[in-house]
Length: 65
Image (cartoon, rainbow, N blue to C red; front, side, top):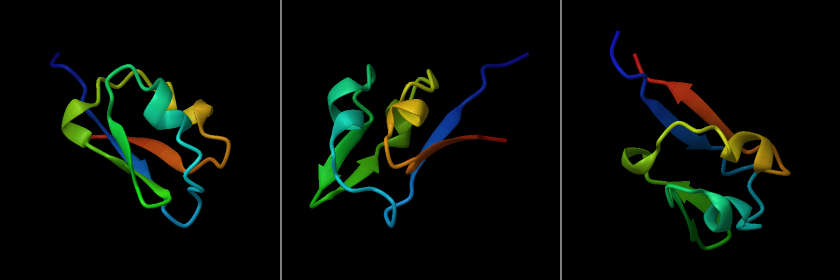
């Protein structure tokens, strides 16, 4: 079995730019553009920390096929 890869998705309409994901993501996947988090999917290690961390439930991890 190969490694499972994930794509972090940010729902911009829910994100309020609190920056918790930017500050706490161990792989530094997120950055703020204006008041919205943006993910660099290529950096994601699939730890899933970002999903429960987001107080607005704006982040999800999608398993790549």
